[in-house]
Image 1 (tube, rainbow, N blue to C red):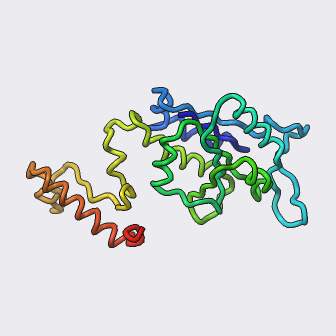
Image 2 (image 1 turned 120 degrees about the horizontal axis):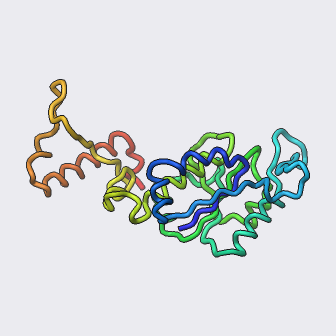
Image 3 (image 1 turned 90 degrees about the vertical axis):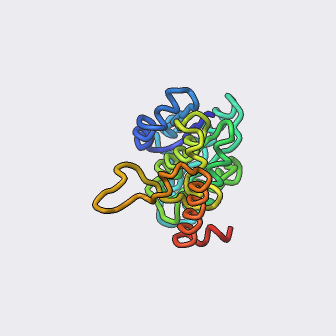
Length: 225
């Protein structure tokens, strides 16, 4: 998989890809991630990528020309299955979307900034719009990092245990069950005895029941989907 991220503040994306699971995935060549500074594609002498919006109103708008140039250049070099725009009014990112995108080949992610992008970008270049929550950030860079993390960890070989991602919260619309580790007893707080029984069918049954009860208590909306 190759992911190309187009943004105005590439510095915000440096750290997430230089540590932990994402770095290991890149080093192992399981995924390629490239960050493109939109200012490198503008013909403006001041490297400006925004302008006032027609009709008046507060806030600047990302202009179409540098975005067009960058996306067109990338598309001339290879095929992309999705061109994603990070925006507060996009589809809310969930595990289903992350699962679907992890099966794709090449992705372009455009990070919104300022008041947003010229609508013609959304009309003619974007194939999917995604939000990471019902709130507004200063730019889409942090949202892009979240999206990449959610996608990349699902790529086979990225996690040490291939089944780990399949038991995460929100897979099968259930929250993950309680988990425990050493010590077995701490301050009088005990680990459920069943987990030491070696009866793995019963343990899996218990985990499924716990996952259902946790979901029913904390996120009953998931059970109705």
